[in-house]
Image (cartoon, rainbow, N blue to C red; front, side, top):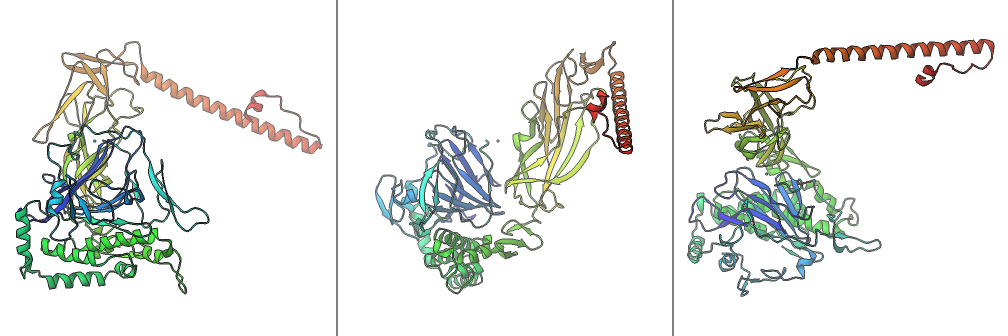
Length: 592
């Protein structure tokens, strides 16, 4: 986990997580927006050598759930125009009986790196404990693009699951090669793509430990914070009374909190205290709804794991589980929409599964995959990944694609422009289609005079206001090299005596694969497709079409003849009241 000061003021001592890296063996997945990054980076950094995913990752809007082979589950969410994340850890059954590096789940005793112990303290934090586990820069950086020295998992992947055997009321935990989870789910999610590189829990009661603020690792920081606690007025005019009143009202107005507050193992006091502390340290309510999210996670875990909530109580028709599902909308739809059966219907101008995304905010394109270079020698270049943000996973998010050809003589072809839906991979990445850059079969009678194709790509969250654009150049490194200049211009050249047609390179004297009558000819830097003197592929093409038409007409004529003959034979047999004679025509027998 990476942390940074929660506010712009560098002498601010509360620290918030700006990134998290999840690792199993050699498989590493990262979510971060730590400086100097301006946008969310959400991607695999390294893949395992086992042949299948070791980390089971589910995504629902901007919410992510990670399930590790031990069964431990971690949840986190990213937010529009915010730098920080929340982390929720749900230990597995295995974790509850094991002692990890920091201690044992359910114990208030924490182990520092030197194995000395400290007691858990909510405020002002545990700076000695936190600093003892900080990772020096000289150690392995799990946020780096060039991770090394990671040990693989030799035993293969496995996942822990819970099932309730027939005739039993209690679930049983087993760990095997499976990605099954408990059958009861709330909300919908989708699996993150295959790995590609470009809080406390007991048997019946499960609570989460939230990690968002970490104490400053300097002793003088604790002194400053203690002084701040004595001030009557907080930042931006807030004080303890106004913050407490705001958080109480927030909880009272939440339908979800109203449903969950009667569940014995759901703790409202801790999230409420966090809500007040967030306002104190941040000077605003930007993290207030996160307190609701904490309760949501606690409540959902409790009602899904405890089967007593799955059946209606005496005299009721609806179970608490079903009632929770009806109001389990993420972040209470951020107060920019209505919740119906667990799904948010957003107000006009807002989008996302939690209605937290303002579609009027124009995204920014930071860069294109591979710095805008797409090599036909490596892939088809039908689509390109665009990085930046914040992108909204909604049908209103569009890509604008402007394209033109650069001919080998330096001339520019006609420019075209289209708008099409994007594929939103995350808040920091979208995929824009570029069309088929390599055609399966040309419809032209001879090869074209081509060189490279250039695209200008921009993105809009509402289909109206578009981001800045970035260039993509499609070329074939077998015979070309290209440069996108600082002035946003494209310069390309051949690497030798080659011609190019439909993305394929041909050497001097090499015939075209489709138009076999044409040969690449390079002389004094001039390139052209030369037709052989004894070859007329245009005439062959015309002859082929004519023969094809004639053959179709002959087949139709024979079919008509056979049908007429059959009808006459059947009519004669009826008049004479005799059986029709067998067909003697082999052609008719074959066709009919």
